[in-house]
Image (cartoon, rainbow, N blue to C red; front, top):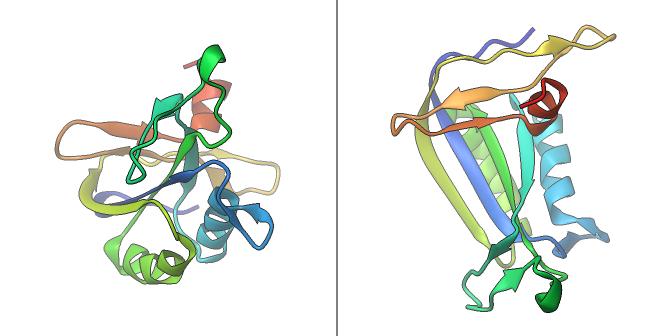
Length: 142
């Protein structure tokens, strides 16, 4: 089981939901590459409204149907693993935002699946914000 505690780095990639890489959603490509790179975990969050460098507002509101909502891929691991991964995925993000922030991992706990691997991440940063794996949160009723 992977353990992660103490200083770490949070990678955040903001892209459009309709952005693709070789015919598949870009966010899915990033998550699969993070998994293949052995990073601690990755989660994708879908925005309900937002705008970026294009200055065009995208929203889920019924009268403004959008097909390109913002999505965020959030990955936390040690800097030594995150930094080379940024170089790998940067060319994939043609439009969007990539940020890095140093964080402090307070707790990283996962449930064991039938195969014996841990899933889920729980992280906290120095500014008091936290991010968790959405599948674990949903399974636990949060």
